[in-house]
Image 1 (tube, rainbow, N blue to C red):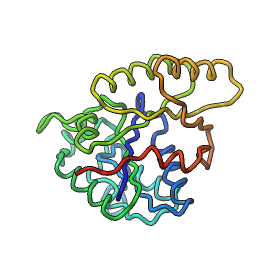
Image 2 (cartoon, rainbow, N blue to C red):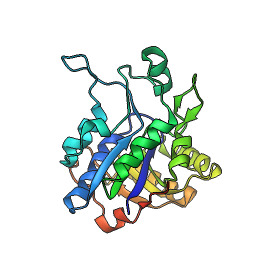
Image 3 (cartoon, helix red, strand yellow):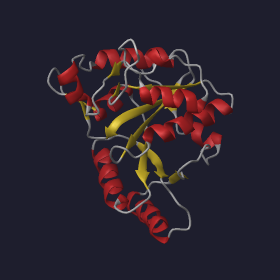
Length: 231
């Protein structure tokens, strides 16, 4: 039975894709059948033939060393580095929930552990004009638990607590937090993490330093975060 997990963040450019790559690599290195999925990717380059390269998917594929085809990792790929709802307004090809769900379940039918990454923070709209779809709608439709990616540095207490409280209010389960850009032996960062644990009640799952090539987390603990896929 396939299992899934959603990765969201307190904002954009926090390193969600970087950590997603480390997560999928951890599973793949443990000989688990691991895959990656994302509903919509923005800010992508074009190949010589004009087709768009799903950059986040390519990064995860290379980082994790998996053979999952890029074309099944993301149904919506945009050139402009905007929120998907705005990118699709400019480029066309707006996100449709049925397409996102079909692609996700297709991946789930072929792999045991599917890691799904969100676009931006939890409130990011992925479609607005044709339909009102937010990331939280995708999480709810797919019945996924989440983990939160946050920066370890200044300002993270406010952004972590607000994000967690919002998700709790929306009945979106959060399993824990991974802190990125962690330096180690930094009194402010360590206090940030302590305060976030205290104010949210959520555990710290891992602390990731810039340049890390391995996720410092027991693979069994990682696997336990995933929940069985529900149709």
